Amino acid sequence: MTVTYLKSGVANWPLVDPSKPRWDHQAEELESFGTDKSRGLLWGMRTGKSRVIVDSACALRSGNRIRGGLVFAPNGVHMNWVLKQIPFHFWPGMTW
Image (cartoon, rainbow, N blue to C red; front, side, top):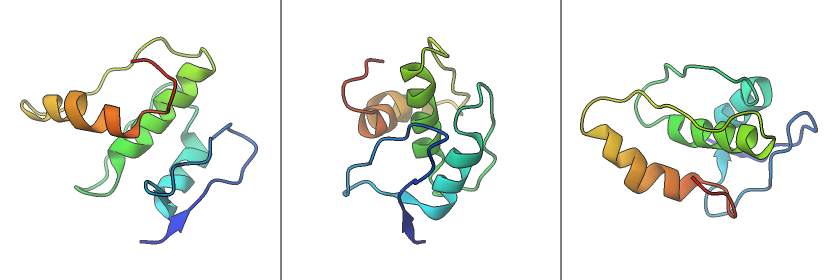
């Protein structure tokens, strides 16, 4: 997978930390649907769903379009979101 930085002015996507770049398919998803208030990602395992979901939530939160989010995940995986995914991908300066 190759790395892409978002260039569109449609959504106000911040430049990402170079150590955590977005893949092309993640950038395309964010450009097309990143500011939709509801969306489901039915991608396969290890395809970068968490990054897209957290980026989208941060963008909506920074624009005061949402106050919270809900992630449906199998039992046991929910702690992975709380302990790893959200802290790793959350935008600097935002609270959760």
